[in-house]
View 1 (tube, rainbow, N blue to C red):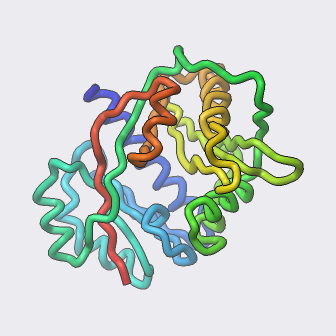
View 2 (spheres, rainbow, N blue to C red):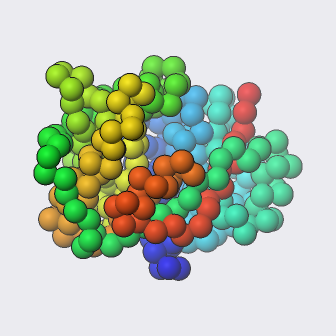
Length: 244
């Protein structure tokens, strides 16, 4: 379990690095202890965030992170729940605990694909549009940064109704791990298990590419979707957010 948790943290850092390298007008800040991305056009602490590397403390770096995120409307820092010194330092800087998703992971050898649903490759524009609508944020909050991610770096999948993309998921290959992000379904299509079907297909293709594990962050409500696919919970991860 400890190895899977470390692998999941590395995949989260890889996703943050990807945003910092490719999103429009983005900046990347990285050293041996953390990676951080800043995207001025997005007011999301998922997009503008810092991730510690291999369990390193984040508290010693808060001054430089605060300078790095200067002018960003919302930004966040991911930490382990057990990192009490980091939590206290973040709180002293004015950040508040925003969310406590659960890390989940699985091997890929037990994922079954649903052959009755047509899952297709979609654009990152589609992924952003569905995520903005699904999470009720202004258009472009997630969509604009995601639209800049190169197709060679991520694998985006979806289900369409006519010409409309209604459910999506993204896979980023990080070593042997298929890191899952941006899973979302448009509100009128919820309750039909579309997201789990998209993901099952995506993970099947990840296994065909030679990957062996998969990891993600799940909301409390979303855990059941992933548990049905064979994911197991590895404990919480905490996001502290700096708000306007």
